[in-house]
Amino acid sequence: MKCRKCGAKASVNMRQHRLALCKEHYLEWVPEQTERFIKKYQMFDRGDKILVAISGGKDSLSLWDILVRLGYQADGLYIGLGIDGGINYSSESHRLTEKFANENNLKLHVVDVENEYGQPIPMLSEISHRGHGKPCAVCGLTKRHVMNRIARDLGYDVLATGHNLDDEAAVLFGNTLQWSSEFLLRQGPVLPSTEGLARKVKPLCRFYEREMTAYALLRGIEYIYEECPFAEGSTSIYYKELLNKLETDRPGSKLTFYLRFLEARQRGDLFAEKDIRQANLHPCPNCGQPTSAQGLCSFCRLMEKAEGVATISRSAL
Ligand code: AMP
Ligand code: FES
Ligand code: ZN
Ligand code: ZN
Image (cartoon, rainbow, N blue to C red; front, top):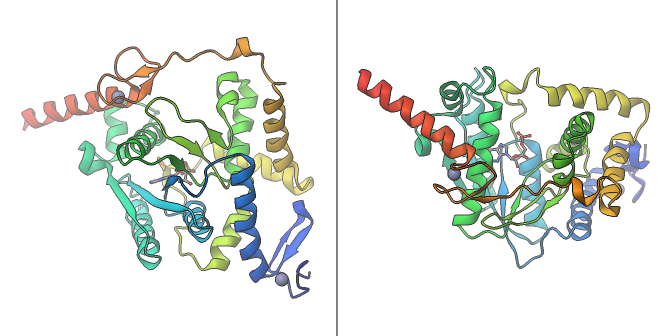
């Protein structure tokens, strides 16, 4: 297989695009495509201050690398979740994120959940009895809250995450199986800013996961290979496997599934306006982030519960 641009030996062959490229041209192609997506979906421009949420995985570290190379003002945010799982998941991902920031002279904000909120994620989850023994729901809620808070408090215009096509197609598949119109209408490369929340963008949403792996490897980015130990057996991994089977038989179907959805939604073909239930958001009286709940937002309710339990266990000593 030869590189389409220079005829040298290809390093990456993308069947779905009928495109093979050598290392040098692949490392040019990925940022060029990212720039194209940023413009196409009007994500941000060079005057915007961008906060990139970094997990220490291949996608978010590659995203940071690409944005900086393209000349955007991008700082990082790492959230220490306190997940060990026998592989030191959190400490290892923190180490690799710091390493990347130091080597590239980039600014990284770090928020440690245990320091800031008194307990690591697995404990917060246990205390709240949410998620049937799996901390993923509490983890997602906490990450969202922290990302929104840091973006708002430090004055960032945009919050960028490293979600790739495999992530987005799996979420879309789940939402389609349920025909959850509220979620379907909100899913996309850009979530506009609302009162008190920065705009959210996913610049890698059109890259296959294997394309991002190839980018990180060819660029020499050191990232955490392991998935979060709690992800095992999750529905989203099951959907990813199903879509991968489909993709093997019909290359390109994952991308088509996602892009045709975006196009249909753009045309207004999917749901009538009346189906868009206005969420009726108001600021949480404690943290100020928008919520549809009566009274405190779900994160503040979680904190209230956790603090109550912490006080009880302290007084029992
Ligand atoms: P995940 O939900 O683990 O698939 O991650 C999706 C995206 O969320 C990543 O690409 C990151 O941008 C962001 N993210 C996940 N975990 C963290 C973390 N611990 N700190 C900061 N950002 C994160
Ligand atoms: Fe949060 Fe796995 S539970 S990353
Ligand atoms: Zn080439
Ligand atoms: Zn709140």
